[in-house]
Length: 312
Image (tube, rainbow, N blue to C red):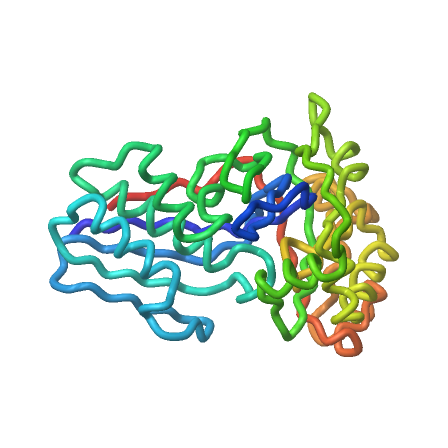
């Protein structure tokens, strides 16, 4: 039985600008995608009888509506898949948090099946399947750690990876549906015309420039309905985050800190690893009252490489 394993890495939107709206109502974006170490564990087995999906760690609803399942079915149809498949997902990425968890799983399944297939699909066809599943799936199917996304996010320009940085994720107990966030933004904006141009990035890109360009156009519309998210973002900035933003349509707020190897090696260096509170402290050690804010703190880091598919 052939098996493919892959870490389905989550993503951050280091910036997200809405630059226009298409006739069908979809928004045109300019966004900077960044992979992080936080990942679901996805295993795909081929040469089995039937088709199955098992998911542990979170309630993701009916199998037939699961994005990873839909990805597998779409791939099998496109590739004339000759056998069954069994998919196992161990969820670690918060659901509905703007981190691309469902999209990452779908992308991991596409990559795994393509690695197991007797005849892998052309890259353009794989990209088309990914885009049909969702706007984040093409990026998460790619091997780009850092990329500029335009269109609906599916047109990708790979960028040289930035040095790894520590990240704190503050994850509320609720999610925000993407369609709601974009609808709130549209209602708030009214008839004001869009600029119509994608974000231009200077080269070479650096973290200092990311700090300058880090804007999320969905934040204000979402914050109007969830005021606590604004407070969470301000709290991260107050404890030293160089970038503190909402990822995607929310609800996760991320803070980017320093070089993880530097803070681990030198006592007294302020970074996310130093800010993670001791067990039972309730966040007090870093000046964040996690219980008051109603959030879970998840430490992670940006990465410079996409996790490979391992075939056994």
